[in-house]
Image: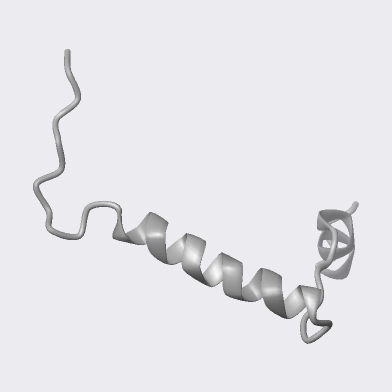
Length: 50
């Protein structure tokens, strides 16, 4: 069965928006204006590391 094409005029906009905001955040991290955290640190902070 062939995949149906999305007839929405906004098809692909979510992916484009994700890439756009991801690039902005990556630049903020590169400039030291934002930071990242490891998944292990987030899990520990939330108390889910039982």
